[in-house]
Length: 171
Image (cartoon, rainbow, N blue to C red; front, side, top):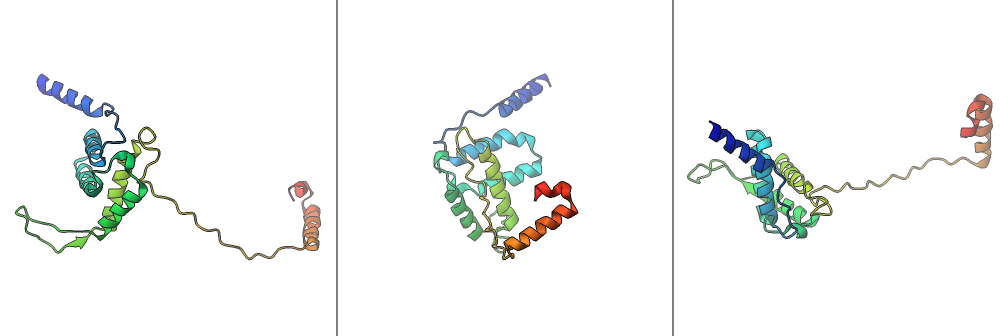
């Protein structure tokens, strides 16, 4: 029992220790595997399985060095995943269902887990998180509001001053 407890304590300490510093030349796949190993002890079994599946979906860009990883690389891989299909299979490899595309939720989880893993590298290795979604600037609609003439403005200001003299400075 003491030996098992000592082994468990040593394993937990190793997994919770700060990871060896990643380098910008480290491949994404190697980093993701290490990141998963470090954090998996903190997750439930269901979360662990979901995150493992989510990270496996990024195999296509697993060889890209962290320093070369860009938002465009991730967007391209995500677009490929949107076109990809998956199929349930038996242990012998025979399909049990028709091939179907990944759901929107599945793709979102994959991007979210990648984002979480890469966020640990900012700002030490990466200047920014390439998995972060860009917020699109929404154009401000032009308001076609009537503009007061000088006379109308003067009338308003005089009326406001008579009605609430203590607020006159605000006008």
